[in-house]
Length: 88
Image 1 (cartoon, rainbow, N blue to C red):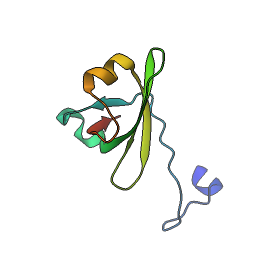
Image 2 (cartoon, rainbow, N blue to C red; image 1 turned 135 degrees about the vertical axis):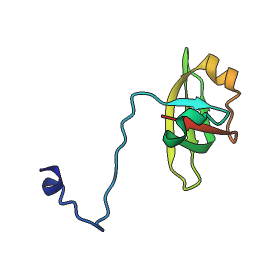
Image 3 (tube, helix red, strand yellow; image 1 turned 30 degrees about the horizontal axis):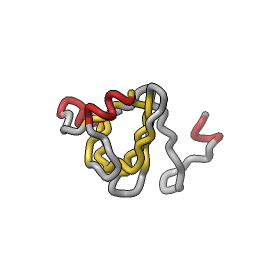
Image 4 (cartoon, rainbow, N blue to C red; image 1 turned 90 degrees about the vertical axis):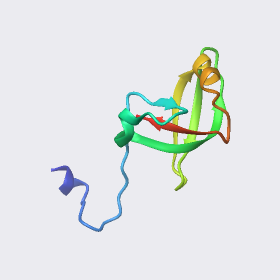
């Protein structure tokens, strides 16, 4: 029914909205999540009172943001222009 309502057809341009309940960040390749990871570069880090927000950008320019504790940002050494993997 959704296919009809959205008028989806093969070859038609569309958008995918991905809703993840968790976004995990890592600075080393987490091999056990390989099929679910996106490699990117940190483009923004904003500290908050307890949690901060980190944004990564993949090689095609797609940006993904996630909440992470300030302590974890420090422990992982996440800084703008630092390479890492995001796992969701």
